[in-house]
Image (cartoon, rainbow, N blue to C red):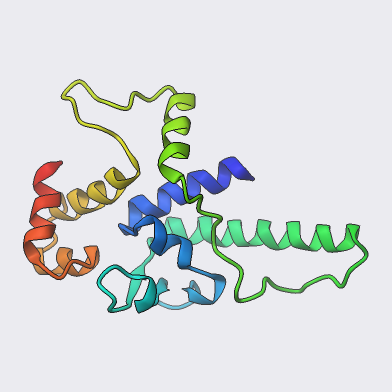
Length: 169
């Protein structure tokens, strides 16, 4: 499960532009997966710009998250059976979506090495956890998303910040 969790952490960071601490703050109660526009709710207290946001979730990520939550529930149920405790019917609302390591930078570097991925490419660009956020911004730009929309998706208060990210990649 650890490998699957890490893969989903990286995928979620890449597809949402969330920062590490923002992703770490998301619990089951923050997810709206069964509505026409699935999203995660980011509370203002955990967001850098302190505004709070609804983070849209792509359909493939929604399916991955549903499977992940199903696996988490099964694990919790199996653990309860083994300990002869009441078997939960659902995950508690306060359950964190992921166990995001505080030292995710080091974990990411180790995972890159284990996967045989170089930390620097031929052009000297560095791959790190924050580059997943930069890549999110680049994909918005290359997809023709208007600057103001990209700024909102990146949760930047200044449009210049969104431009800097898309120009760096």
